[in-house]
Length: 413
Image (cartoon, rainbow, N blue to C red):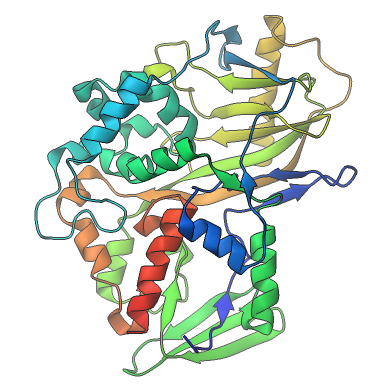
């Protein structure tokens, strides 16, 4: 396109939700964020463009077995929940009744279908998709009690395209962060890391002024246009020159937090993965009672287990100490029922705790029904500012990249 760009990121690296831990001793990578990618032409082209080989994604580790256990009680489920193909097929057929949700399902041309305003649990019950819940539960992590979320967000994430891509086999790099490391090299000095917006001035018709705090001091960027891809919740938009319309739209967003990290000295055998399977009546569909770990995965590094951890709908932050205590109690309950061996002498440690937040930003069914997404997408291009990211699509790299491509094309028409 023959355009000059400057990229501003508050982190000290590129990648956002993509973060790879490299074990110092074995050099074995462990993904603490984006683990896999849909097998699409766009994904393959993007990795080829940045010279990163892709391989078939395989989370299976030879010799590792899985147990489903209620982490709240330590009781074994004594079953392996499996999604039924029949229920998934009917769900995919149902999706054909709605326009594509990946951009703006609420485009102002017609009301949002009432089904998509239902809590997702009611949608499942209405159409008898209970057999698909093991799939939804496994991949719907980090959304709080996701069966209470408006169905719109579920079908934006669990799309027919995503299910088809899983059938074709997902893709991954040896270390997914390599993609962004190569992008950073290519951008060179045009990538301002550990930097944040101090203030903006969007009053001119032909340019925007953005003052950025960098490690070497403030820098003024004068650009023709801005593309923001951060989660557009108000606490993220300090320094942005928001007008009254933008403030009223972004103020509606709420969000969840999803934690990922590694456990050391857990006493869990290296060949065992544990999934949190709710056996009480507190949550429907045998979902985990939150806050809690969703799973404790064996890794290819002896002595390390990978975990994911979710909060309930009323919480957006836990300290590392709170997460550690919660997991310790879960492990103790499983030891008490002899699912795990006796406690090791060493103290449980959490390594590289990563908070994916704001995660899965959302609004209420009432706001969706009143045209929230029409108002959100009408912000595109106003005052030379454009928007992208998961808030506009869903938490799927291929979908976000595809939508961002369409936004960039619009910016330079």
